[in-house]
Image (cartoon, rainbow, N blue to C red; front, top):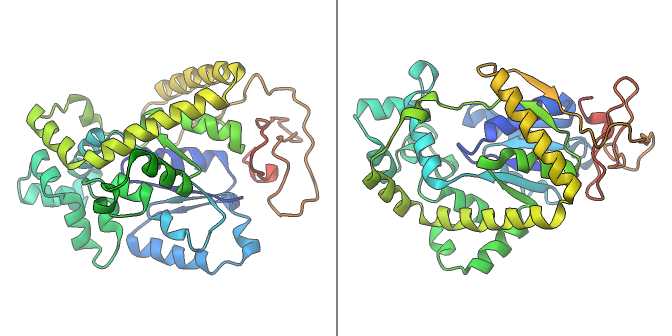
Length: 335
């Protein structure tokens, strides 16, 4: 089984696919779609050309515009994160304005035209600039602040989304995605994938967090306007938030909840101790799973199919969380 992480801009995706995935998996078992738009398109074409056997070796693929892989990976399970729409717009604005070295094209455009947050949101500057720098690329919509999260989750334009009922919206999201989590609850998203899809638990640091965010206080009138241009994002965010809570409440047992609390405390402690160190990571071993006797299957029908019961590694004897859900290859995990 291949999981494809569709990275929506400024939703903690960089932390997930760079900080977490890079530490959790061996290089041959995951692939990141990074770099310029042209570089990503070249990678898309390479992935599309892979035969079925080669595709099955990839446990995770992640990056911007990964949704475009759906025709080539129809059996993959798609996952993503979404964020409070107002917070996302502010984050996109500050990211462009204060990007390292001041080289971000959005930041350059904002400074050249002396544009405020209100201007940025009203005129959808990020999408405008992306359209200028990536002519002919669909990336323009994926970085929009005007309901781009809703459009990426549902795969249809805003005008069509506005016609759907709440139940129809959820049905379509669930048809397209195996799991949609919240940026604000990245740890819960990862723990759920650990419990139900055998993703290893890792300790890691958050990436691309702008220090300017802490002191940036937008005018209430600007917030109100942002809410107006992100109405569909807000609706979808609330639906996903409610469903995510329901998934956790119905699929986690008391042991899972207790173990998650321990994991979250340790993760926050690790991030505090390693603040400023983007390369810091460590494997988190669940106390509940230590000592569990696990057998590594040496012959599998699928090259990445090892029982999703875990691993007894020769050196570390670290066990991955037992799950009845999808198969993963124990040998590919970075143990």
